[in-house]
Image (cartoon, rainbow, N blue to C red; front, side, top):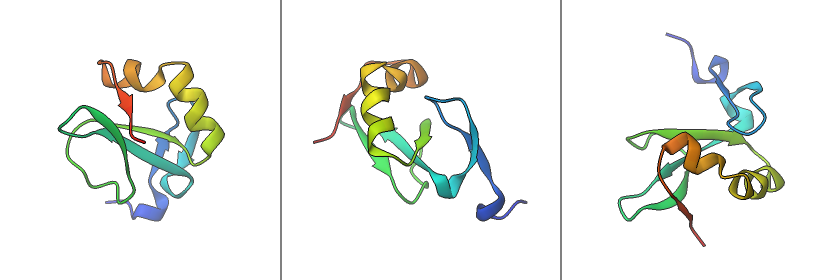
Length: 77
């Protein structure tokens, strides 16, 4: 099994493959609110995105989270 430092995921916005250290995972909470999963251990479907505030804003505008999670989402905060 690969160590966490060696694991890669695809950024849902840029479609670039990156190490998980350069990405952040988002999940839907039980209340339907999109929240960051900083430990990457929450159950359920997650969306990986480049660790950059501007990328998160762009992903919300382009409805990347809704497409990836196959449901409408509301960002926390």
